[in-house]
Amino acid sequence: MSVGHTAVTTEPVVSCGGEEEDCGIREVLDRIGDKWSVLVVVELAQGVRRFRRLQRAIPGISQRMLTLTVRRLERDGLVRRTVYPTVPPQVEYELTAMGHSLTHLVRALADWSADHRSAIADSRHRWDAANPGSDIR
Image (cartoon, rainbow, N blue to C red; front, side):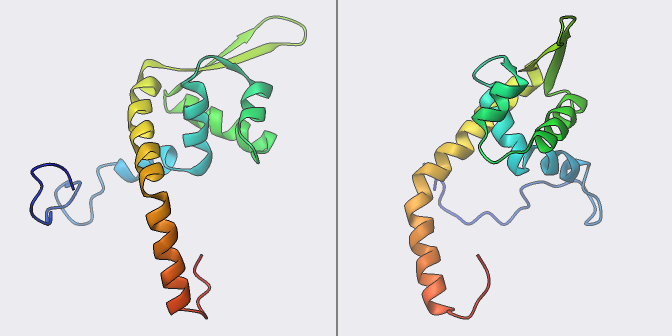
């Protein structure tokens, strides 16, 4: 808990009005919260990257998935794609100002994950031991 936090928060983290309304937040969170987008943002936070270097920096991502991910991030205004008229064409990717504004949040989430990694692993171990037939992983 944060300093000064003494009670359980009962108000919604996000409130848009009615229960049916999501304010468009779900769509944005789906994009920036997916596995590959976060990793692309983390890598591009370090500077401009060409496609192959970006792909090598993100283990397990296929060429097609990286292409889709950077195009979606470009569509959302988080990534800028620059094509240079060379043979073969040289393409570079970089975060826009809005993309850079996201990096401190991603860093905070990564720091939180690192700080709580062993506690989560312990909790998973205890839960798995108490629920041996579960297929939840």
